[in-house]
Length: 157
Image 1 (cartoon, rainbow, N blue to C red):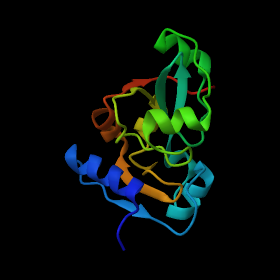
Image 2: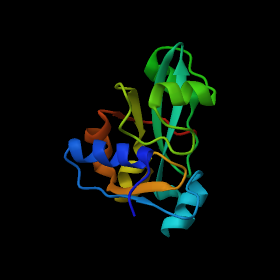
Image 3: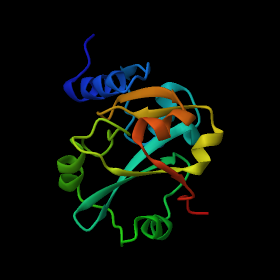
């Protein structure tokens, strides 16, 4: 079965970047970390959730373990500006994807990205792939080269 246009965009971005990850679209929802973990048979911690924040008119991508919350104060300190959660329209306009399916790559322009340090200890993880039911499996150490992101302590403890 062919991928939907949004999932295909992510698969094409993975291929163009030289990663052999394969996007899969599932019947079950992967919109939340818990739903994604149940759908692929893993733990919530192994879901790499891509969260868009807003720093003025610029998007900031925080990729965190599904069991962690992003500490907005830590993120703001890294960004050097106040960050806030944007509305759905801002997310779609800046990433090309809807909330619940935002992938770590494949956006129309480069987005400043921060990666939750806790993800690196997990080995195999899963990330959203453009729709609320599409995901792909990758090795945690691939996230930084895949996104150009900076590994940082962004989890709320």
